[in-house]
Length: 248
Length: 150
Image (cartoon, rainbow over all chains, first blue to last red):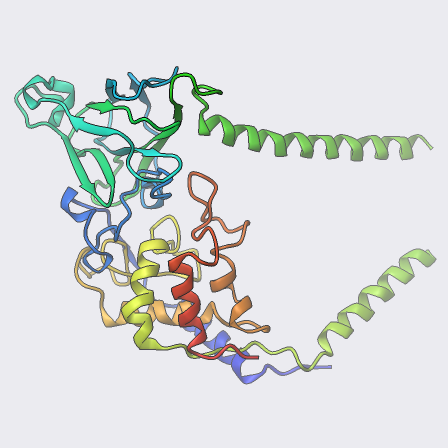
């Protein structure tokens, strides 16, 4: 029995066919710091600042993709527990062998998803070459700060710096999240394609709180390895069943 | 041998039974284009239209606009959205509402909440964490403007 398509179904297929032959689209990256806080109609984030934190969700990886991940190291985080009111000097550094790097990071309260504590840039006069454009001692500092809607975002422009330093004064809440996203620009520089992204997520707890320094990366990995374990068990069972049948 | 015959027969019976159902129709509604442009399009740009997500050319559902993927290469990256981009995004969003069981069960309203949607963020959450999320409420309200048949 041959079944003819209903009118709405034909309309959907026609629409699909039309859309499939639509012209190729272009892809562009954010080009300047001021663009991020703007409305989406102006090409901004519309409230998203792409730190990957629980306050935002999305990281740089929603736009930048396809390239090699940058190698990033974070120094100075109070991973053994932070003391409320205490100020910590934190540095995020990356291997700057190839490609410019840019970053957005923030520290948020796990419970409220709002900014936690206080972050500030260090005195520009004390910034060494690594924190400056081109990693050159006389260039301008690459760091900046964006504030609004209860969030503080530390950023580094993609101008050739190889680290960013900032100060963080801890809040009196049980748990905070340090989250950031670092992009290494690939070629061509004007496009987000070919860029590599490293997302940084770390749950930090107040000194004295249980389960110090749990890492969300570790939790994610544990969940994945759990699924892998069950797959492995099922595979082994299937194999054993097949072997026992073959013996009969 | 009897087992195989039964199996083949069962497959044929089930296949013909499925095709013979005359009531199964895909319903394509026409939700408000005005509300889409004013409210839903900015929402989709904010939450969906990124190059690695629904700006990717390999996806059917795509959203085009400033600071994201442009529909035409010659459009400047941050130029205002063109009428063509809004229309194109509307058409694709509208198609995502087509569903045999009505818009409530359509991919556009189901996937942003669904566990297997690829849009989970760094924390394993989906685009909208629950149905009361303001973004989801807006999307649903718009979807219903075209009726929620059947």
